[in-house]
Image 1 (spheres, rainbow over the protein chains, first blue to last red):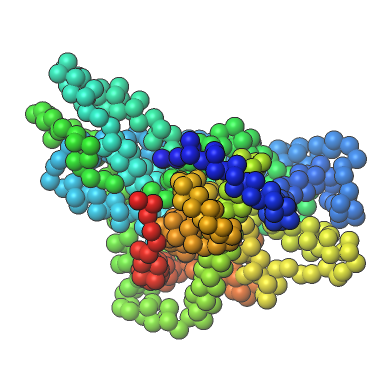
Image 2 (image 1 turned 45 degrees about the vertical axis):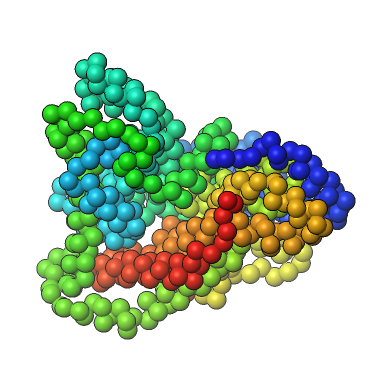
Length: 293
Length: 301
Protein backbone atom coordinates (compact mmCIF):
# COMPACT_ATOMS: atom_id res chain seq x y z
CA UNK A 1 0.00 0.00 0.00
CA UNK A 2 1.49 3.27 -1.09
CA UNK A 3 -0.87 5.81 0.36
CA UNK A 4 0.39 9.27 -0.19
CA UNK A 5 -0.58 10.79 3.12
CA UNK A 6 1.71 13.78 3.22
CA UNK A 7 0.39 15.42 0.07
CA UNK A 8 -3.15 14.53 1.03
CA UNK A 9 -3.64 16.66 4.11
CA UNK A 10 -3.16 20.06 2.51
CA UNK A 11 -5.46 19.38 -0.36
CA UNK A 12 -8.06 17.50 1.62
CA UNK A 13 -8.77 20.53 3.72
CA UNK A 14 -9.14 22.58 0.55
CA UNK A 15 -11.49 20.07 -1.02
CA UNK A 16 -13.40 19.90 2.20
CA UNK A 17 -13.63 23.67 2.40
CA UNK A 18 -14.95 23.49 -1.10
CA UNK A 19 -17.65 21.11 0.03
CA UNK A 20 -18.38 23.09 3.10
CA UNK A 21 -19.34 25.88 0.73
CA UNK A 22 -21.84 23.50 -0.80
CA UNK A 23 -23.66 22.93 2.47
CA UNK A 24 -26.79 21.32 0.93
CA UNK A 25 -24.59 18.89 -0.99
CA UNK A 26 -22.73 17.86 2.09
CA UNK A 27 -25.93 17.53 4.05
CA UNK A 28 -27.26 15.21 1.34
CA UNK A 29 -24.11 13.07 1.46
CA UNK A 30 -24.39 12.65 5.20
CA UNK A 31 -28.08 11.82 4.90
CA UNK A 32 -27.37 9.02 2.40
CA UNK A 33 -24.55 7.63 4.52
CA UNK A 34 -26.62 7.73 7.70
CA UNK A 35 -29.59 6.15 5.91
CA UNK A 36 -27.49 3.16 4.89
CA UNK A 37 -26.01 2.91 8.38
CA UNK A 38 -29.59 2.72 9.70
CA UNK A 39 -30.35 -0.26 7.47
CA UNK A 40 -27.53 -2.22 9.10
CA UNK A 41 -28.07 -1.05 12.69
CA UNK A 42 -31.86 -0.83 13.10
CA UNK A 43 -32.74 -4.47 12.29
CA UNK A 44 -30.29 -5.57 14.98
CA UNK A 45 -31.74 -3.13 17.51
CA UNK A 46 -35.24 -4.31 16.65
CA UNK A 47 -34.38 -8.00 16.98
CA UNK A 48 -32.47 -7.44 20.23
CA UNK A 49 -35.44 -5.56 21.66
CA UNK A 50 -37.76 -8.42 20.72
CA UNK A 51 -35.47 -11.02 22.27
CA UNK A 52 -36.44 -9.67 25.70
CA UNK A 53 -40.18 -9.94 25.02
CA UNK A 54 -42.65 -12.80 24.76
CA UNK A 55 -44.23 -13.66 21.43
CA UNK A 56 -47.61 -12.27 22.50
CA UNK A 57 -45.99 -8.98 23.50
CA UNK A 58 -44.26 -8.83 20.11
CA UNK A 59 -47.53 -9.43 18.26
CA UNK A 60 -49.64 -7.07 20.35
CA UNK A 61 -47.35 -4.05 20.44
CA UNK A 62 -44.74 -4.35 17.67
CA UNK A 63 -42.79 -1.25 18.74
CA UNK A 64 -43.10 -1.73 22.49
CA UNK A 65 -40.08 -1.99 24.73
CA UNK A 66 -39.52 -4.80 27.24
CA UNK A 67 -41.24 -4.07 30.56
CA UNK A 68 -38.51 -5.87 32.46
CA UNK A 69 -35.24 -7.61 31.73
CA UNK A 70 -37.07 -10.77 30.71
CA UNK A 71 -34.55 -13.55 30.07
CA UNK A 72 -37.13 -16.27 29.46
CA UNK A 73 -36.28 -16.49 25.75
CA UNK A 74 -32.60 -16.84 26.57
CA UNK A 75 -33.27 -19.63 29.04
CA UNK A 76 -35.27 -21.44 26.41
CA UNK A 77 -32.49 -20.90 23.86
CA UNK A 78 -30.13 -22.61 26.28
CA UNK A 79 -32.43 -25.41 27.42
CA UNK A 80 -34.67 -26.22 24.48
CA UNK A 81 -32.48 -25.64 21.42
CA UNK A 82 -29.17 -26.05 23.23
CA UNK A 83 -27.36 -23.10 21.69
CA UNK A 84 -24.28 -23.67 23.83
CA UNK A 85 -23.73 -27.14 22.41
CA UNK A 86 -23.88 -25.77 18.86
CA UNK A 87 -21.41 -23.08 19.81
CA UNK A 88 -19.05 -25.71 21.13
CA UNK A 89 -19.41 -27.71 17.90
CA UNK A 90 -18.84 -24.65 15.70
CA UNK A 91 -15.75 -23.59 17.63
CA UNK A 92 -14.20 -27.07 17.63
CA UNK A 93 -14.78 -27.63 13.91
CA UNK A 94 -13.81 -24.15 12.69
CA UNK A 95 -10.87 -23.94 15.10
CA UNK A 96 -9.46 -27.28 13.95
CA UNK A 97 -10.00 -26.28 10.31
CA UNK A 98 -7.99 -23.08 10.85
CA UNK A 99 -5.11 -24.95 12.52
CA UNK A 100 -4.93 -27.57 9.76
CA UNK A 101 -5.20 -24.98 6.97
CA UNK A 102 -2.44 -22.84 8.45
CA UNK A 103 -0.15 -25.84 9.07
CA UNK A 104 -0.62 -27.63 5.73
CA UNK A 105 -0.96 -24.40 3.73
CA UNK A 106 2.13 -22.97 5.39
CA UNK A 107 4.20 -26.07 4.65
CA UNK A 108 3.09 -26.25 1.02
CA UNK A 109 3.49 -22.49 0.60
CA UNK A 110 7.02 -22.65 1.98
CA UNK A 111 8.09 -25.36 -0.47
CA UNK A 112 6.45 -23.61 -3.42
CA UNK A 113 8.12 -20.31 -2.56
CA UNK A 114 11.61 -21.69 -1.92
CA UNK A 115 12.30 -24.68 -4.14
CA UNK A 116 12.33 -25.47 -7.83
CA UNK A 117 11.19 -28.94 -8.75
CA UNK A 118 9.67 -30.92 -11.57
CA UNK A 119 5.94 -30.73 -10.94
CA UNK A 120 5.85 -27.22 -9.57
CA UNK A 121 4.06 -25.70 -12.54
CA UNK A 122 1.52 -28.52 -12.53
CA UNK A 123 0.84 -27.93 -8.84
CA UNK A 124 0.42 -24.19 -9.36
CA UNK A 125 -2.00 -24.88 -12.18
CA UNK A 126 -3.99 -27.33 -10.05
CA UNK A 127 -4.24 -24.70 -7.31
CA UNK A 128 -5.72 -22.18 -9.71
CA UNK A 129 -8.24 -24.76 -10.96
CA UNK A 130 -9.08 -25.80 -7.41
CA UNK A 131 -9.78 -22.23 -6.46
CA UNK A 132 -12.61 -21.93 -8.95
CA UNK A 133 -14.49 -25.06 -7.91
CA UNK A 134 -17.73 -24.30 -6.05
CA UNK A 135 -18.83 -26.58 -3.21
CA UNK A 136 -21.84 -27.70 -5.28
CA UNK A 137 -19.54 -29.79 -7.46
CA UNK A 138 -17.67 -31.54 -4.67
CA UNK A 139 -20.53 -32.09 -2.24
CA UNK A 140 -21.88 -35.39 -3.60
CA UNK A 141 -18.59 -37.28 -4.12
CA UNK A 142 -17.27 -36.07 -0.77
CA UNK A 143 -20.51 -37.22 0.85
CA UNK A 144 -19.91 -40.69 -0.68
CA UNK A 145 -16.37 -40.75 0.72
CA UNK A 146 -17.56 -39.70 4.17
CA UNK A 147 -20.22 -42.42 4.16
CA UNK A 148 -17.61 -45.03 3.19
CA UNK A 149 -15.32 -43.88 5.99
CA UNK A 150 -18.31 -43.80 8.37
CA UNK A 151 -17.57 -40.17 9.22
CA UNK A 152 -20.93 -38.50 8.50
CA UNK A 153 -22.15 -36.62 11.59
CA UNK A 154 -18.73 -36.53 13.23
CA UNK A 155 -16.58 -33.41 13.58
CA UNK A 156 -14.16 -34.71 10.94
CA UNK A 157 -16.97 -34.79 8.36
CA UNK A 158 -16.89 -31.00 8.27
CA UNK A 159 -13.26 -30.39 9.24
CA UNK A 160 -11.77 -32.36 6.34
CA UNK A 161 -13.78 -30.80 3.45
CA UNK A 162 -13.49 -27.31 4.98
CA UNK A 163 -9.73 -27.74 5.30
CA UNK A 164 -9.39 -28.91 1.71
CA UNK A 165 -11.63 -26.09 0.47
CA UNK A 166 -9.55 -23.39 2.15
CA UNK A 167 -6.11 -24.94 1.53
CA UNK A 168 -6.03 -23.78 -2.08
CA UNK A 169 -6.37 -20.13 -1.25
CA UNK A 170 -4.15 -20.48 1.85
CA UNK A 171 -1.32 -22.08 -0.13
CA UNK A 172 -1.48 -19.43 -2.87
CA UNK A 173 -1.55 -16.58 -0.38
CA UNK A 174 1.17 -17.91 1.92
CA UNK A 175 3.57 -18.91 -0.86
CA UNK A 176 3.16 -15.46 -2.43
CA UNK A 177 3.97 -13.82 0.90
CA UNK A 178 6.94 -16.11 1.59
CA UNK A 179 8.36 -15.47 -1.88
CA UNK A 180 8.69 -11.83 -0.90
CA UNK A 181 10.80 -12.60 2.19
CA UNK A 182 14.54 -12.14 1.97
CA UNK A 183 16.65 -15.29 2.17
CA UNK A 184 19.46 -13.94 4.39
CA UNK A 185 18.23 -15.41 7.66
CA UNK A 186 17.55 -18.68 5.93
CA UNK A 187 21.06 -18.90 4.52
CA UNK A 188 22.61 -18.14 7.89
CA UNK A 189 20.47 -20.78 9.55
CA UNK A 190 21.40 -23.36 6.92
CA UNK A 191 25.10 -22.66 7.46
CA UNK A 192 24.54 -23.14 11.19
CA UNK A 193 23.16 -26.58 10.42
CA UNK A 194 19.45 -25.93 10.96
CA UNK A 195 17.04 -28.40 9.38
CA UNK A 196 14.38 -27.30 6.91
CA UNK A 197 11.67 -27.93 9.50
CA UNK A 198 13.49 -25.66 11.95
CA UNK A 199 13.87 -22.99 9.28
CA UNK A 200 10.15 -23.26 8.52
CA UNK A 201 8.94 -23.05 12.12
CA UNK A 202 11.56 -20.64 13.52
CA UNK A 203 12.01 -18.27 10.56
CA UNK A 204 9.23 -18.48 8.02
CA UNK A 205 6.26 -18.85 10.34
CA UNK A 206 7.17 -15.87 12.54
CA UNK A 207 8.11 -13.67 9.57
CA UNK A 208 4.87 -14.51 7.75
CA UNK A 209 2.61 -13.74 10.69
CA UNK A 210 0.56 -11.07 8.85
CA UNK A 211 -0.22 -13.52 6.04
CA UNK A 212 -1.05 -16.28 8.50
CA UNK A 213 -3.38 -13.90 10.34
CA UNK A 214 -5.18 -12.97 7.11
CA UNK A 215 -5.59 -16.59 6.06
CA UNK A 216 -6.64 -17.62 9.56
CA UNK A 217 -9.35 -14.96 9.86
CA UNK A 218 -10.67 -15.67 6.38
CA UNK A 219 -10.75 -19.42 6.95
CA UNK A 220 -12.37 -19.16 10.37
CA UNK A 221 -15.21 -16.91 9.26
CA UNK A 222 -15.77 -18.89 6.07
CA UNK A 223 -15.97 -22.16 7.99
CA UNK A 224 -17.94 -20.76 10.93
CA UNK A 225 -20.56 -19.17 8.66
CA UNK A 226 -20.98 -22.04 6.20
CA UNK A 227 -24.45 -23.57 6.06
CA UNK A 228 -24.45 -25.57 2.82
CA UNK A 229 -21.82 -28.22 3.62
CA UNK A 230 -22.79 -28.28 7.30
CA UNK A 231 -26.39 -29.19 6.40
CA UNK A 232 -25.14 -32.19 4.45
CA UNK A 233 -22.29 -33.48 6.61
CA UNK A 234 -23.09 -32.54 10.23
CA UNK A 235 -26.84 -32.01 10.61
CA UNK A 236 -27.29 -34.31 13.60
CA UNK A 237 -28.23 -32.52 16.83
CA UNK A 238 -25.11 -33.68 18.67
CA UNK A 239 -22.61 -32.29 16.18
CA UNK A 240 -24.54 -29.53 14.38
CA UNK A 241 -22.88 -26.11 14.22
CA UNK A 242 -24.69 -22.83 14.91
CA UNK A 243 -25.72 -22.31 11.28
CA UNK A 244 -27.53 -25.66 11.06
CA UNK A 245 -29.25 -24.98 14.38
CA UNK A 246 -30.53 -21.66 13.01
CA UNK A 247 -31.94 -23.31 9.90
CA UNK A 248 -33.84 -25.74 12.13
CA UNK A 249 -35.09 -23.07 14.50
CA UNK A 250 -36.75 -21.28 11.60
CA UNK A 251 -38.68 -24.40 10.57
CA UNK A 252 -39.33 -25.99 13.98
CA UNK A 253 -40.17 -22.86 15.97
CA UNK A 254 -41.64 -20.78 13.13
CA UNK A 255 -44.38 -19.25 15.29
CA UNK A 256 -42.22 -18.64 18.34
CA UNK A 257 -41.08 -15.11 17.43
CA UNK A 258 -39.41 -14.45 20.77
CA UNK A 259 -37.24 -17.55 20.56
CA UNK A 260 -36.32 -16.86 16.92
CA UNK A 261 -35.30 -13.29 17.74
CA UNK A 262 -33.18 -14.60 20.60
CA UNK A 263 -31.57 -17.20 18.33
CA UNK A 264 -30.49 -14.38 16.00
CA UNK A 265 -29.17 -12.30 18.88
CA UNK A 266 -27.16 -15.04 20.58
CA UNK A 267 -25.52 -16.01 17.29
CA UNK A 268 -24.86 -12.48 16.05
CA UNK A 269 -23.70 -10.69 19.21
CA UNK A 270 -20.53 -12.72 19.96
CA UNK A 271 -19.38 -12.34 16.35
CA UNK A 272 -20.17 -8.63 16.55
CA UNK A 273 -18.06 -8.20 19.69
CA UNK A 274 -15.08 -10.01 18.14
CA UNK A 275 -15.55 -7.92 15.01
CA UNK A 276 -15.54 -4.62 16.92
CA UNK A 277 -12.31 -5.59 18.72
CA UNK A 278 -10.48 -6.92 15.64
CA UNK A 279 -12.28 -4.99 12.91
CA UNK A 280 -9.25 -3.67 11.04
CA UNK A 281 -7.62 -7.09 10.76
CA UNK A 282 -10.94 -8.68 9.85
CA UNK A 283 -11.77 -6.14 7.15
CA UNK A 284 -8.28 -6.51 5.70
CA UNK A 285 -8.37 -10.29 5.93
CA UNK A 286 -11.72 -10.67 4.22
CA UNK A 287 -11.17 -8.20 1.39
CA UNK A 288 -7.60 -9.28 0.63
CA UNK A 289 -8.57 -12.90 0.94
CA UNK A 290 -11.22 -12.55 -1.72
CA UNK A 291 -9.41 -10.15 -4.03
CA UNK A 292 -5.99 -11.80 -4.08
CA UNK A 293 -7.09 -15.37 -3.84
CA UNK B 1 2.06 -13.34 -7.92
CA UNK B 2 3.66 -16.75 -7.66
CA UNK B 3 6.83 -16.01 -9.56
CA UNK B 4 9.45 -18.42 -8.23
CA UNK B 5 12.31 -16.00 -8.75
CA UNK B 6 10.78 -12.92 -7.20
CA UNK B 7 13.03 -10.76 -5.05
CA UNK B 8 16.07 -12.67 -6.28
CA UNK B 9 15.73 -15.39 -3.70
CA UNK B 10 18.75 -17.70 -3.80
CA UNK B 11 17.74 -21.32 -3.69
CA UNK B 12 20.07 -23.38 -1.58
CA UNK B 13 19.97 -27.08 -2.24
CA UNK B 14 20.86 -29.75 0.20
CA UNK B 15 20.78 -33.48 -0.39
CA UNK B 16 17.64 -34.05 1.64
CA UNK B 17 15.66 -31.39 -0.19
CA UNK B 18 13.79 -33.87 -2.38
CA UNK B 19 12.46 -35.59 0.69
CA UNK B 20 11.56 -32.24 2.26
CA UNK B 21 9.67 -31.09 -0.83
CA UNK B 22 7.71 -34.31 -0.86
CA UNK B 23 6.89 -34.38 2.84
CA UNK B 24 5.92 -30.69 3.03
CA UNK B 25 3.62 -30.89 0.03
CA UNK B 26 2.10 -34.25 0.92
CA UNK B 27 -0.62 -33.24 3.45
CA UNK B 28 -1.93 -30.35 1.36
CA UNK B 29 -1.89 -32.29 -1.91
CA UNK B 30 -3.49 -35.32 -0.30
CA UNK B 31 -6.34 -33.26 1.17
CA UNK B 32 -6.94 -31.40 -2.10
CA UNK B 33 -6.80 -34.55 -4.19
CA UNK B 34 -9.31 -36.45 -2.06
CA UNK B 35 -11.74 -33.63 -1.32
CA UNK B 36 -11.37 -31.37 -4.37
CA UNK B 37 -9.83 -32.85 -7.52
CA UNK B 38 -11.15 -36.40 -7.34
CA UNK B 39 -14.70 -35.11 -6.60
CA UNK B 40 -14.68 -32.95 -9.75
CA UNK B 41 -13.90 -35.96 -11.92
CA UNK B 42 -16.33 -38.12 -9.98
CA UNK B 43 -19.10 -35.49 -10.38
CA UNK B 44 -18.63 -35.38 -14.14
CA UNK B 45 -18.72 -39.21 -14.21
CA UNK B 46 -21.93 -39.27 -12.17
CA UNK B 47 -23.76 -37.07 -14.69
CA UNK B 48 -23.96 -40.10 -17.02
CA UNK B 49 -25.93 -42.17 -14.51
CA UNK B 50 -29.34 -42.23 -12.96
CA UNK B 51 -28.74 -42.89 -9.27
CA UNK B 52 -31.84 -42.55 -7.11
CA UNK B 53 -30.77 -42.63 -3.46
CA UNK B 54 -27.29 -43.17 -4.88
CA UNK B 55 -27.88 -46.94 -5.12
CA UNK B 56 -27.80 -49.14 -8.26
CA UNK B 57 -26.62 -46.40 -10.61
CA UNK B 58 -27.76 -47.02 -14.19
CA UNK B 59 -25.79 -45.72 -17.17
CA UNK B 60 -27.99 -43.45 -19.28
CA UNK B 61 -25.56 -41.62 -21.53
CA UNK B 62 -26.53 -38.00 -22.04
CA UNK B 63 -30.08 -38.33 -20.76
CA UNK B 64 -29.42 -36.19 -17.66
CA UNK B 65 -28.22 -33.38 -19.90
CA UNK B 66 -31.35 -33.65 -22.06
CA UNK B 67 -33.45 -33.53 -18.90
CA UNK B 68 -31.55 -30.40 -17.89
CA UNK B 69 -32.53 -28.62 -21.09
CA UNK B 70 -36.21 -29.53 -20.74
CA UNK B 71 -36.51 -28.96 -16.99
CA UNK B 72 -38.71 -25.87 -16.39
CA UNK B 73 -37.24 -25.34 -12.92
CA UNK B 74 -33.77 -25.08 -14.47
CA UNK B 75 -35.15 -22.37 -16.76
CA UNK B 76 -36.54 -20.51 -13.72
CA UNK B 77 -33.28 -20.95 -11.81
CA UNK B 78 -31.15 -19.65 -14.67
CA UNK B 79 -33.52 -16.74 -15.24
CA UNK B 80 -33.43 -15.92 -11.52
CA UNK B 81 -29.64 -16.19 -11.55
CA UNK B 82 -29.36 -13.64 -14.37
CA UNK B 83 -31.85 -11.27 -12.70
CA UNK B 84 -29.79 -11.69 -9.54
CA UNK B 85 -26.59 -10.87 -11.46
CA UNK B 86 -28.14 -7.72 -12.89
CA UNK B 87 -29.25 -6.68 -9.42
CA UNK B 88 -25.83 -7.23 -7.82
CA UNK B 89 -24.12 -5.22 -10.59
CA UNK B 90 -26.42 -2.24 -10.14
CA UNK B 91 -27.10 -2.31 -6.43
CA UNK B 92 -24.33 -4.29 -4.73
CA UNK B 93 -21.35 -2.87 -6.63
CA UNK B 94 -23.14 0.36 -7.58
CA UNK B 95 -24.14 1.22 -4.02
CA UNK B 96 -20.70 0.15 -2.82
CA UNK B 97 -19.06 2.63 -5.21
CA UNK B 98 -21.50 5.42 -4.35
CA UNK B 99 -21.07 5.00 -0.59
CA UNK B 100 -17.28 4.80 -0.99
CA UNK B 101 -17.20 8.04 -3.02
CA UNK B 102 -19.34 9.73 -0.38
CA UNK B 103 -17.32 8.50 2.59
CA UNK B 104 -14.13 9.59 0.81
CA UNK B 105 -15.53 13.14 0.64
CA UNK B 106 -16.47 13.60 4.27
CA UNK B 107 -14.36 14.61 7.22
CA UNK B 108 -16.13 13.12 10.23
CA UNK B 109 -17.24 9.58 10.88
CA UNK B 110 -15.22 7.71 8.21
CA UNK B 111 -14.23 4.93 10.58
CA UNK B 112 -17.76 4.70 11.96
CA UNK B 113 -19.29 4.19 8.52
CA UNK B 114 -16.63 1.65 7.59
CA UNK B 115 -17.33 -0.36 10.76
CA UNK B 116 -21.10 -0.22 10.38
CA UNK B 117 -21.21 -0.98 6.65
CA UNK B 118 -18.88 -3.94 6.81
CA UNK B 119 -20.26 -5.90 9.72
CA UNK B 120 -23.06 -7.81 7.91
CA UNK B 121 -20.32 -9.60 5.93
CA UNK B 122 -18.90 -11.06 9.11
CA UNK B 123 -22.30 -12.55 10.05
CA UNK B 124 -23.47 -15.88 8.72
CA UNK B 125 -26.15 -15.82 6.05
CA UNK B 126 -27.96 -18.24 8.36
CA UNK B 127 -28.31 -15.63 11.14
CA UNK B 128 -29.15 -12.84 8.72
CA UNK B 129 -31.60 -15.04 6.85
CA UNK B 130 -33.45 -15.77 10.07
CA UNK B 131 -33.35 -12.06 10.90
CA UNK B 132 -34.94 -11.18 7.55
CA UNK B 133 -37.57 -13.88 7.96
CA UNK B 134 -38.55 -12.08 11.14
CA UNK B 135 -38.61 -8.72 9.35
CA UNK B 136 -40.87 -10.22 6.66
CA UNK B 137 -43.13 -12.03 9.14
CA UNK B 138 -46.81 -11.46 8.30
CA UNK B 139 -48.14 -11.05 11.84
CA UNK B 140 -45.63 -8.76 13.45
CA UNK B 141 -42.55 -8.46 11.28
CA UNK B 142 -40.87 -5.06 11.18
CA UNK B 143 -42.12 -4.30 7.65
CA UNK B 144 -45.78 -5.02 8.36
CA UNK B 145 -45.57 -3.29 11.73
CA UNK B 146 -44.41 -0.13 9.97
CA UNK B 147 -47.18 -0.45 7.35
CA UNK B 148 -49.82 -0.94 10.03
CA UNK B 149 -48.45 1.96 12.05
CA UNK B 150 -49.13 4.23 9.08
CA UNK B 151 -52.56 2.67 8.55
CA UNK B 152 -51.82 0.39 5.59
CA UNK B 153 -52.84 -3.24 5.16
CA UNK B 154 -50.16 -5.84 6.00
CA UNK B 155 -48.46 -7.48 3.02
CA UNK B 156 -47.59 -11.13 2.43
CA UNK B 157 -43.93 -10.52 1.61
CA UNK B 158 -42.86 -14.01 0.65
CA UNK B 159 -45.47 -14.83 -2.01
CA UNK B 160 -44.49 -16.17 -5.43
CA UNK B 161 -44.43 -12.71 -7.00
CA UNK B 162 -42.03 -11.14 -4.50
CA UNK B 163 -39.99 -14.05 -3.10
CA UNK B 164 -37.02 -13.59 -5.45
CA UNK B 165 -36.85 -9.88 -4.65
CA UNK B 166 -37.10 -10.66 -0.95
CA UNK B 167 -34.07 -12.99 -1.06
CA UNK B 168 -32.07 -10.63 -3.28
CA UNK B 169 -32.46 -7.69 -0.91
CA UNK B 170 -30.69 -9.25 2.12
CA UNK B 171 -27.99 -10.83 -0.07
CA UNK B 172 -27.20 -7.49 -1.69
CA UNK B 173 -27.56 -5.64 1.61
CA UNK B 174 -25.05 -8.02 3.22
CA UNK B 175 -22.35 -7.51 0.58
CA UNK B 176 -22.58 -3.77 -0.21
CA UNK B 177 -20.09 -3.10 2.60
CA UNK B 178 -17.59 -5.52 1.10
CA UNK B 179 -17.38 -3.68 -2.23
CA UNK B 180 -17.56 -0.38 -0.37
CA UNK B 181 -14.32 -1.26 1.46
CA UNK B 182 -12.52 -2.43 -1.70
CA UNK B 183 -13.42 0.78 -3.55
CA UNK B 184 -12.67 3.01 -0.56
CA UNK B 185 -9.21 1.42 -0.27
CA UNK B 186 -8.65 2.12 -3.98
CA UNK B 187 -9.81 5.73 -3.57
CA UNK B 188 -7.35 6.46 -0.77
CA UNK B 189 -4.51 5.39 -3.09
CA UNK B 190 -5.27 8.11 -5.64
CA UNK B 191 -2.63 10.81 -5.18
CA UNK B 192 -4.06 14.26 -4.52
CA UNK B 193 -2.06 16.15 -7.13
CA UNK B 194 -4.37 14.60 -9.72
CA UNK B 195 -7.33 16.32 -8.12
CA UNK B 196 -5.44 19.56 -7.61
CA UNK B 197 -5.37 20.39 -11.31
CA UNK B 198 -9.06 19.71 -11.68
CA UNK B 199 -9.73 21.82 -8.63
CA UNK B 200 -7.73 24.73 -10.00
CA UNK B 201 -9.47 24.48 -13.34
CA UNK B 202 -12.80 24.71 -11.60
CA UNK B 203 -14.16 21.26 -12.38
CA UNK B 204 -17.31 20.38 -10.49
CA UNK B 205 -17.21 17.46 -8.03
CA UNK B 206 -19.33 15.46 -10.44
CA UNK B 207 -16.92 16.07 -13.36
CA UNK B 208 -14.01 15.17 -11.13
CA UNK B 209 -15.58 11.84 -10.23
CA UNK B 210 -16.44 10.95 -13.83
CA UNK B 211 -13.22 12.14 -15.46
CA UNK B 212 -10.59 11.36 -12.84
CA UNK B 213 -11.76 9.09 -10.06
CA UNK B 214 -13.70 6.41 -11.92
CA UNK B 215 -11.09 5.76 -14.65
CA UNK B 216 -8.40 5.50 -11.98
CA UNK B 217 -10.26 2.88 -9.96
CA UNK B 218 -11.51 1.00 -13.01
CA UNK B 219 -9.38 -2.07 -12.29
CA UNK B 220 -10.80 -2.29 -8.77
CA UNK B 221 -14.35 -1.91 -10.09
CA UNK B 222 -13.60 -4.72 -12.53
CA UNK B 223 -12.48 -7.01 -9.71
CA UNK B 224 -15.63 -6.11 -7.75
CA UNK B 225 -17.88 -6.84 -10.71
CA UNK B 226 -16.32 -10.24 -11.37
CA UNK B 227 -16.46 -11.19 -7.68
CA UNK B 228 -20.08 -10.06 -7.42
CA UNK B 229 -21.25 -11.78 -10.62
CA UNK B 230 -19.52 -15.10 -9.93
CA UNK B 231 -20.67 -14.81 -6.32
CA UNK B 232 -24.28 -15.09 -7.46
CA UNK B 233 -23.60 -18.63 -8.69
CA UNK B 234 -22.52 -19.57 -5.16
CA UNK B 235 -25.64 -18.21 -3.46
CA UNK B 236 -27.29 -20.82 -1.31
CA UNK B 237 -27.42 -20.10 2.44
CA UNK B 238 -29.52 -16.93 2.36
CA UNK B 239 -32.10 -18.30 -0.09
CA UNK B 240 -32.30 -21.57 1.82
CA UNK B 241 -32.94 -19.78 5.11
CA UNK B 242 -35.63 -17.47 3.77
CA UNK B 243 -37.63 -19.35 1.11
CA UNK B 244 -35.86 -22.67 0.37
CA UNK B 245 -36.38 -21.70 -3.27
CA UNK B 246 -40.16 -21.47 -2.99
CA UNK B 247 -42.99 -20.78 -3.15
CA UNK B 248 -43.50 -22.85 -6.32
CA UNK B 249 -39.79 -22.53 -7.23
CA UNK B 250 -40.27 -18.77 -7.70
CA UNK B 251 -37.06 -17.90 -5.84
CA UNK B 252 -35.12 -20.99 -6.92
CA UNK B 253 -31.45 -20.46 -7.79
CA UNK B 254 -29.14 -23.15 -9.15
CA UNK B 255 -27.54 -23.84 -5.77
CA UNK B 256 -30.82 -24.41 -3.93
CA UNK B 257 -32.22 -26.48 -6.79
CA UNK B 258 -29.10 -28.65 -6.83
CA UNK B 259 -29.34 -29.18 -3.07
CA UNK B 260 -33.02 -30.13 -3.08
CA UNK B 261 -32.55 -32.37 -6.13
CA UNK B 262 -29.83 -34.36 -4.40
CA UNK B 263 -30.70 -34.26 -0.72
CA UNK B 264 -34.50 -34.09 -0.82
CA UNK B 265 -35.50 -35.77 -4.07
CA UNK B 266 -32.41 -38.00 -3.75
CA UNK B 267 -31.54 -37.80 -7.48
CA UNK B 268 -27.76 -38.01 -7.23
CA UNK B 269 -26.99 -38.29 -10.95
CA UNK B 270 -29.23 -35.43 -12.03
CA UNK B 271 -28.05 -33.29 -9.10
CA UNK B 272 -24.45 -33.74 -10.27
CA UNK B 273 -25.51 -32.57 -13.72
CA UNK B 274 -26.86 -29.35 -12.19
CA UNK B 275 -23.55 -28.90 -10.36
CA UNK B 276 -21.64 -29.22 -13.63
CA UNK B 277 -24.01 -26.66 -15.18
CA UNK B 278 -23.08 -24.24 -12.37
CA UNK B 279 -19.35 -24.60 -13.17
CA UNK B 280 -19.90 -24.21 -16.92
CA UNK B 281 -22.09 -21.15 -16.36
CA UNK B 282 -19.39 -19.72 -14.06
CA UNK B 283 -16.70 -20.09 -16.73
CA UNK B 284 -18.92 -18.62 -19.47
CA UNK B 285 -20.08 -15.66 -17.38
CA UNK B 286 -16.52 -14.86 -16.23
CA UNK B 287 -15.26 -15.00 -19.83
CA UNK B 288 -18.06 -12.70 -21.04
CA UNK B 289 -17.51 -10.24 -18.20
CA UNK B 290 -13.78 -10.13 -18.92
CA UNK B 291 -14.46 -9.64 -22.61
CA UNK B 292 -16.90 -6.76 -22.02
CA UNK B 293 -14.80 -5.00 -19.42
CA UNK B 294 -11.50 -5.64 -21.18
CA UNK B 295 -8.54 -3.85 -19.71
CA UNK B 296 -9.74 -0.31 -20.09
CA UNK B 297 -8.97 2.32 -17.52
CA UNK B 298 -5.78 4.13 -16.74
CA UNK B 299 -3.08 3.58 -14.17
CA UNK B 300 -1.71 6.24 -11.91
CA UNK B 301 1.72 6.10 -13.54
